Image (tube, protein in one colour):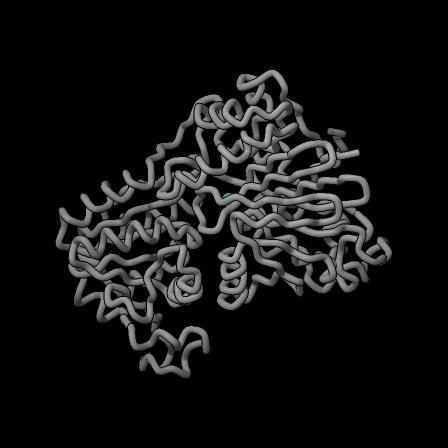
Length: 450
Ligand SMILES: [Zn+2]
């Protein structure tokens, strides 16, 4: 018997944990953390205690109590006994938080399959963040074209266009036919051809089932979205129309967006200033030549901003070892202040205090290249605007989503033409019923036979 069980991504955007069973073979597709996980019980600094392993998570039912899945040390403070692995593999579609974070709890003996680029992302994030730990794993990397045999299954990863490099959908060949797992995908980024290739390959398998993401499956879209090309064109207009500095803020893992701003800066004769964290990530991702990203050590259009430390000297010893590598590309706050018209600066919201040192001229520009806030009471959004007003900066909202919109999702479902659709990663499963008659609404932890 072949079946699907959903332990995450049910009636919410993110946190996918999709279990596929085929006879004795049991494989998870993604093992992420939902963005709202435990928000009834945990908030801000009130968080699950690391020392209690899975104990604090099981207390509130935040992870499923499945035997043979978790690491021994994670189970020590729980009522779930440790047994040898009963799961054969975990496949990761891409390195977004809501698809990978909970692999930290997995038994290290369960192999984790992931794209070459996804592994580079995970390593860079562990290196540059003291909070991010994914645990010990036997990682096995794949690329499009590979066919990976796990027990009775053959898993075929196929690249897709998404707001992070190295994103994949999966064609899973089971004893009961092919199951398609979409991962997260879009068709308005620089690599729409990859999404098209995925759709073609999926259709050719005449799939029995598709597990389909539905982030933008909404009644009416309220927020403004552009294509990646439009973001680039409109940003270039902002930069070319001013002699003042332009700041941009974007999702740190969105390298298509980085490339857009890098090219906008370059074509306007400016350099782009990035954080050591972004420089480190780039220096790892250039190892994958297919990603076509600039090398921060060699590329003269990239400068690296080091925050002022107590010594005020910008000496190597003031910074982490992984940060020091880029000090030849040093941009201090004074340098940025003196060369405002020559620069585009990547500046994350949480680094806004640097504005106090940089002292941007009144009338400078700020491009917010992320989703618009979900509610008008969004505190961070209010704080961000208070800072922009304080420094008399001009605000621009320019963003391209990482996901297909509703008409595109309808096309996807109809093009691939699977016999049955399971909507995941969506708040509106029922809207999928407008795309096709064979929609199976999913429920948390319920097993669906295929
Ligand atoms: Zn994603």
